[in-house]
Image 1 (cartoon, rainbow, N blue to C red):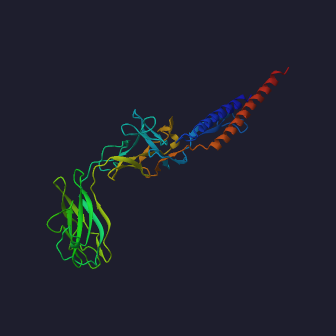
Image 2: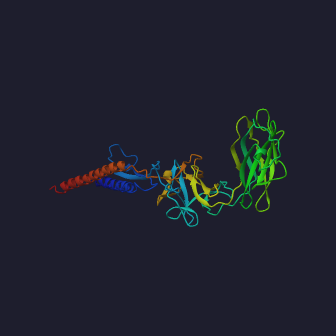
Image 3: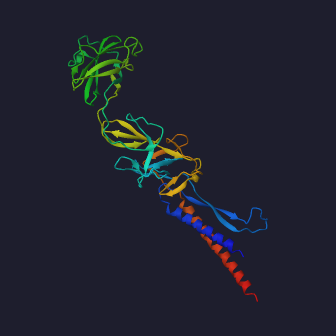
Length: 403
């Protein structure tokens, strides 16, 4: 009697319904992946004749499908989604490493980026100058300490001096606007982050020749010009006559001086009005962290009140030769196995890794409509296999009743 066939069909259909139910229940779970049941027919032996009816069906495997889920935007910069392949690499408090596509992270009281279960997101740290240290991935920590000040060491200027101007013909006096042709100013910082306003004055002395004077908080620096500019006939700086940069010792409020290299190699002298297109210096005062952002390559950039930004680290992603070989742990986490292969850890966007999208989450890749259709099919399969058992029972009853 063929009770075995129907029984195997009932077991397979029930297992299929369990998996479908799991998929449906996780249709709104961030980062979860749909699971499917793979069936196989069974025979008594591989060499059975073609007339043998077989023994029914068996569940061969239950596999998760790691296709991309839809991305939805949020207002939280610590919500992250992997757009492409790869997994977030997280470290449990016990030190165990696992992998997830659930990008719902937050900061704990120690500044670590953690999951809701307290596992820490791992990545590559940054040194004190914001340079990412590629190598071994470790727990990412956002340092909320004040950014230390940096003393100004260089100033770069891009501006145009009007070649039509006439030489004033009088000694320079910062209080006399007729003694110079143009002026601009910039702040420089000492080693403690205190700023000093340096004004630069340009006085034409002859065709294609200018003197540069400077003041520090209104007081003239030096007894004469701090630099000169010579131009060729095309209006560009002739650095063979006036090499760049030149050095200015700027007095500070603390009583010391700041030695600044001033580069005006990009200054021009054209027949148009004076105008400054760029005036930059490399110093800054201390700053407090006011926020951060996460780039597509996983770099976490902190923003400070002094206008500076500084890399705090870079998120690491992990990829596997066989993602379906990963072992599910629950909580949207997986661990590596011999079948998955060793993790390939790298920066987002490199070596086939996906990109990080901050302020977004990857939704479940469960197709709810498809799952409901599969549920109907599994139910019909269950009913049909139950019917074969019922029919076999009727046949058996008929045989028993023979007299």
